[in-house]
Image (cartoon, rainbow over all chains, first blue to last red):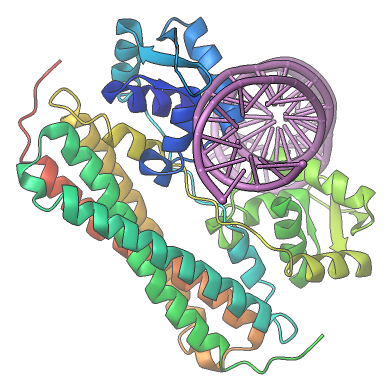
Length: 183
Length: 183
DNA sequence: ACTAACATGTAACCCGTTACATGATTAT
DNA sequence: ATAATCATGTAACGGGTTACATGTTAGT
């Protein structure tokens, strides 16, 4: 049940509406944990039910009203406790790897294309990560404790992204030695 | 619906029983795609229903009989087609990253412990990967096409594992500068 | 008039996990 | 006897995805 905890983590800094959370989950925390707005609204209901979140309606002009959630004391306690729960590693499940097991002359061009697209995607993401790092995390040793944790998450994203690029290059290189065969 | 395709991929080389598949999913393909025996048995039923797999009972002596599955022509075709389906990237969801966002003096020791455990786990896995690489994939350019794909999956695992170790070291280093505070 | 952004939800379905269930054979 | 390995399944639950559903305001 980590989505709930991810939401509460996001609410530690600011009170947010479901809509704003969904936007956040497309960036920042969302780099490491994705969630759709549907999922977020359902989870917000559950968390409110447990009294881990409080809600209040905020009247806006020029926009529809929104329901803003904040983390309660009980929520903070539950979150702090959760950090100590044991988690077992979950290997990433990636279709691309299964597809690679099916590599053949008929699909080598397609797979090279998929890898190229992933490479492009990762380049863009890395550009963003690096921008954030330079702007906010230039000197990690000097950051306040909590921000050090956020920096480490970012650093993992950067490391993994860079290595993924290197792998893409190796893969494309090897694939280019295979004779492609049209359909 | 990639588990089904992962199963069919495993059956391309050999006909296997559910039990044998479950064992395979603890190694080889299972490095990149995990599945429990419960899930596999259910998926086998579905795939049989679609006539993508055929089954036959094999009588054994000294052991309970087993039901062995093989991929049909229709299954091969569906699998070959699936390779061309577009997949969107799914970011790995890792509790540890959410926990890191909650880094504080009260949990720094615990989180350092979790990272150390992950590092250990990854070291063991890398040892295995390297053994397989040396034994079966020493000269990737010379492999037959399909095996080149398997090699690339292995190479990704190795690259990512190595970079993860590096990240663990960086993380433990940074965490060691934070004053821990007992509960 | 139309599109994009803002804003919130429900329902159905699929996939994965956990728990439950059974039973044979081999080795200690 | 008991544990380990071989072998196959069902049922309940929880989480995530897709589809459906509604409505406002601002800009072109």
